[in-house]
Structures are given as C-alpha cells and as structure tokens.
Amino acid sequence: MSDAVSDSTESRSAVTEAEVEALIHGICFKTGPPRRLGVEVEWFVHELRDPRLPVPSERLEAAYTALRTLPLSSALTIEPGGQLELSSAPAASLMECVGSVSADLDAVRTLLRTAGLGLSGYGHDPWNPPRRYLREPRYDAMESYLDRTGPEGRCMMCSSASVQVCLDAGYEEPGPLGYGRRWWLAHHLGAVLVAAFANSPVARGLPTGWRSTRQSLWAAMEPGRSCAPRMNGDPRGSWARHVLDAPVMCVRAESGPWRVPEGMTFRAWTRSARPPGRGDLDYHLTTLFPPVRPRGHLELRMIDAQPGDDGWVVPLAVTAALFDDPEAAETAYRAVKRLAERAASQPPPGNPLWVAAARDGLTDPELHEVAALCFTAAIEALPRLGATGEVLGAVLEFTDRYVARGRCPADDLLPRVYGKDIRT
Image (cartoon, rainbow, N blue to C red; front, side, top):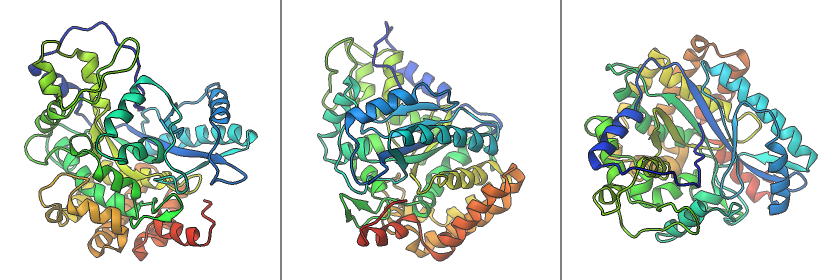
C-alpha cells in the first residue's frame, strides 16, 4: 500500500475528460464486504547515541542498502527527507496485519542497531530543519512546486511522519459498512483521530503551539492539493471533480528535469493540445494529499507517527474497530455527528473542527467527549475482531493514560523538551 511510483514515462495514448471521470469512478472506490486492512508506518532514523543528531547521508544510504536485502513482507520505501516507511501487504485480519508488520520492524531495528541507528516515532521532527535526502526528478519538481506557496511543503516532504491506516471502501449499499457512510465517517472521525494521537508539538527544539504540528502544515498547504472534496453528493462524483480541478504538480519527462506548470488543472490539461495519458492520471493521483485518499481502498492519512516501538498498533486497532465492526461503526457515526456542525461545511483539514483538533488535542471538551465514546466502542469491538489480549491491553493503556484524561502523546513530549530530554 505504498505510494511508490516510477520516474519513467511510458508510451501513452491521451485520455479525455470523460475517460478520466470514468476511470476515477472505477478505480477509486472498489466496493464489497470490508475484509482487508493495511497500515503504512513512517519513522525518523536517528543516531542511537543521540537522537537529536541528523544521520549523515552516506550512513543512511549504507543502512538502506542493507535493509533492502531483508526478506520483508512489507514494502520498504524511503521518503524525501530520509524517513523510512513500511507499507504492509493487505491483511485478512487485524492480527495478521499487526503480526507481519511487527516482524518486519523487528528485523529492521535489529539491522539498524548494528549500524548504531534507531527509529523514532514523531509526527514532525522535533529538532532538525527540513533536509532532503532523495534527489530525484519527481522530488525536485515537488519541492519547486510546493515552494511557491510557502515553507510547509518542504516540512511535509522532509520533516513529517505518520501512521496511515488503509481500509476497504465498504459495501455499495447504504448502512454502517456502506462506502458512502464510511467516506463521511472518515472525514469526521478523522478529527478525533488527529486529536487523540497528536504527537508533534515541537519543531527545531521549540514548542509550536500545536499538538499536531504535522497536521497544521497540511492545513496551511495549497487547498487544492491537501484538502478533501466537499462532503456533498456521491463520493465518486465529488472525488472525480476534485481530481480534475486540482492543479497539476508536474509533467514527467524521459530525461532531465520535470516541467512544473503554472496554474494548470488536470481538467485543463485534458483539453489542451497535448493531453495527458493514463500514466499521467495515475501519477497525478499520487500528488494529491487529502486526509482521506480513495485508492480503491480508503487511505486515512491524518494520524501522527506514534512514540514507542509498538505505538502504531493502537491507532491501527482503534481505527479498524470503529470502521469494520458494525456495532462500533454505528456508535462512532452517532458520536461524531455532533461534530459536523463545527466543520462549518468546509472540507478538512482547514475547517474549524480539524484546526481545533490539531491545535488543542483532547483538551477540547467536545473532542474529548466524542473520543471517550469512540475508544470505549473500539475496546468493546476489538475482541470481536480477534484482537489478542496484548493488543487490547495496549488500547486500554492508551485510553487510560490519554483519552480518559483529555490528553494525547504531545502532552508527554512537551515536558521532555523543557527538560532537554525527549527520547522515546
């Protein structure tokens, strides 16, 4: 479930505007019983002797070359700033997903340890400014494009990390597990997930005023690229219009730098003298960064990377329970309906609800109340999903430590900054 794409440009035949709409309708919401689950976990790689020190590029390259020889079940990719990502294969159950990714992470950590390196889970690098590790045409073009609107793009590329949960789109028919309900739920429950799992209150060694600095960056970026479509009408139609009206980040080239157009939407490109091909559409879809991205399945992108070796398991388990267990899904839907008015009919992540979630975490009374209801529903559902006592215990511990007290992981990190020790 990785975002990895090729730098090559294949031979192509042009696609029309109508064909683009048909393709998006067909590939982005594949409906059926929710059976598969996946997770993408991103990490900062740090020096074991002092995690505040950036790792030199040559040491990262040697470590990543060695990691690529490991027989992992997850896809291993590297983000532009050198962050390491593991993307699970689609799993048939929560515990299959947890087991396969945990085994891969054990292997990765063991190898990195021999090189004096370790992994840290933060939504935003607490110490260092953005530094690009990968030098490839697509990242050169991305950086050039994002620099036009401010510094947030570089921070997103090089200084952020997340836990992304991937869920089946759901049934074609309405109901708690229908794709229309799940699409709506993802965009409203998403604010609760932002608040509960916020873990990025620091940048360059200083508090930023946000529990989730990472989410604040997404909200400040170009809306056509980082915002969700409006929550009105059929999700397929809304997403198709959003894709067509989004600006084109870059036009790929066989060699040399990629062209970065000025103010050209994909719709305008299809109407031009040299329209895009299917590969251009596929690539364009990977350059859109809404909080929920339909890719056949639903990719929930709003959760900060978590502290600890196994912190990522909690958001995976809670999210899976609230979407794939019918009883918990209905409870979550009823709980978050009260939050919809605060969104002010604006799409996330820039609407008032999501901004409050990123800034205040669970100190926001209404988000705290809804989170408590949702976590309780998830705890009750996890045994029905086959969760082990260890996974259930991790969720219970997180709920007691944070949710019940109106706190989030960011509230643990801030005191450590003042104490000059923020190791996980």
